[in-house]
Image (cartoon, rainbow, N blue to C red; front, side, top):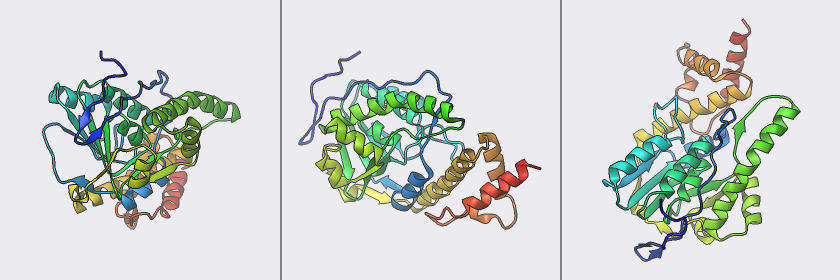
Length: 299
């Protein structure tokens, strides 16, 4: 296993930075880290469907939710990334990211898998690297970001229920992970830990130029390196609407199984087409879905 402080690699004219230390992964996963519906909405509006023009044998793409995803049948997982790295072998790797995030703990695991790769890793942020995806981006020796792309950092976001004692237990459980993530951001950017913590508290979106200015990226990605795939954009938006609905229903007290069953029932109900084909950024119909679930679960 290589040292945490390996020599800096050279990528073009950009000197790479040493990768920060590994992040802790919780043994107790009863608390599920999620991406908020608001971030899914932002991704649908600003980054859905953004893809790279060029691909190669040494490229790992992360154009999906982080963690296994029920609605798309995909998702980016540490197991999949590890398998791709084994296939690439002892060669430099390019990681292309356009993701709203997802399971923060899975993102931490992916970050740890990438940082153990023995060859230089170039991360290219195409569209957005939010939440868990922004942690993954920090594994790159070199980070390039599109001028119109965004990198978003925030505290670990979860869906939890219980009384005030339960909520305090969850808060205490999450605090060391927020601290560890802040330390990784600070180590990569050179910013003060207090400033990082403040930006995380504020759920901060950084444009390409601001991410470079603050040290979260090394170079701007050329505009001619990305494209918007309209079919992928439509798929991303539809999947995001379903994910946001599920999270809203879970937060309202439904189990995941109940939420998914209800959404599938709504999709098959005449006159309920908005769940399958809502407009980008329009979450007003979620109230209908929540009411539908409440009504049926009480029958």
